[in-house]
Length: 262
Image (cartoon, rainbow, N blue to C red; front, side, top):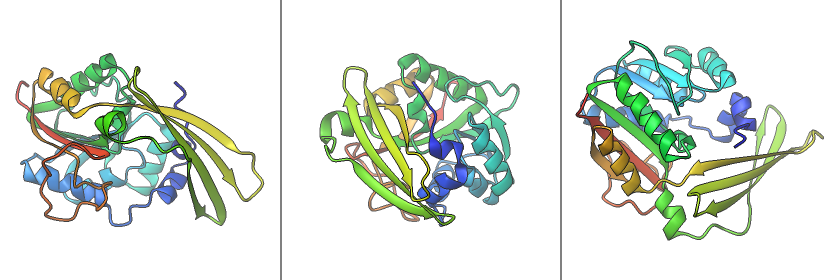
């Protein structure tokens, strides 16, 4: 699978396409860590541009951000300083003797583990990196929603925004492969400056809530919360003080688990 991505390769463009001026994802994560009593050392695995890692750092935590993209890490170090940033593949990582009180994995990064073996490897790495009693906090697309609850729109999604004076337009098409349990995305980018169009393809694992619960339990985690919302990417979005919901039917999935078998 080709993981090349225009937004990943151009982090400033990513932040323009997905603005988060009030740091909603970071605030949701910080409240989740506080609610369940996390210690200060946090690993943000799949940290992307570093916005959320920097928010947690500003909240008083000792944060390590890890990502596979060198462009993202360079941007994070320059634009969102404070955390330590390291290169690591979330599908299999080993940070040596470092131990953390919490591991967070946001914005569907976990779903790049497209097979059971990759998911097991990821959770093994998380378990190895956490102290006993450490928390795992993740936010992602909900596989059950795409597999059972909602048809994929036949019409493509069109979005445009302006960045540094250039209008960027994306046309996105989604396709579900139920047999492989993958959500495929094709996206075509055009700009108003005459540059050639760019077409890119990617895919995410369609992970059902019960599958995630079972995998976490098998790796020595106790699932404390598993719900579809509210969260930083739900509609309506999470607000300060909102408690976890009780359903797992909508298009986003949020999980908080504690390592009991360290």
